[in-house]
Structure formats: C-alpha cells, structure tokens
Length: 95
Image (cartoon, rainbow, N blue to C red; front, top):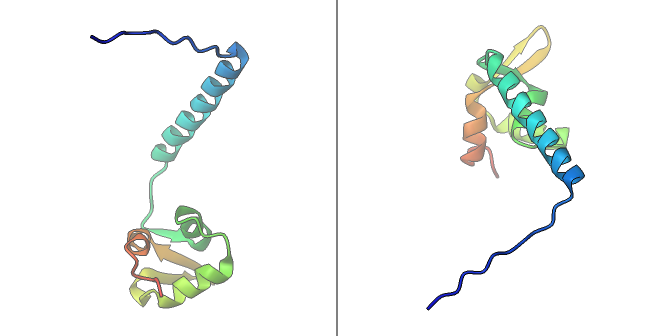
C-alpha cells in the first residue's frame, strides 16, 4: 500500500520570468556560437577560456610543454591548434 501525496511549491512569477529570460540568453548564445565557422587554430586567450585557465603564467607553462605541431606564430601572434583542448583534458600537458 502506497500513498501518493501532491506537493505544491510556490514560485514567484517575477523570478520565473527572470529564469526564462536567462535561459533564452543562454540558448541564443549557443545558436550564435554554432553559426560561426570554427577554425583549426585559435588565439591563446580563446584556448585559456576553453580550458578555464585564468592566469597567463599557468598558460605559459602549459604552452611550453606543448609540441611544436600544436603551436604556431603568425605576425607575432601566437595560436594553438584546437586538438590541444582535448589533449589538455587528457592530461598530456600536466606535470
């Protein structure tokens, strides 16, 4: 014998509208991200953002451990190959 009871939760309509607005923003950002063509090479800051590195010194240590095939410099601008993101999370560049 099991009893089923209903639970009523009170939600502020204003808060619900705010949640829906933020959800729409996130979904629209995702759709814009997919529209942009993804290049094979990305700037250092984009790599740092993708792997959630905040400190440039930490990034410099990781970049030093990368093989030359994943790094490129064009007109004094440094780029990282997109495959480096996967390799970073696989632990290839860790101590």
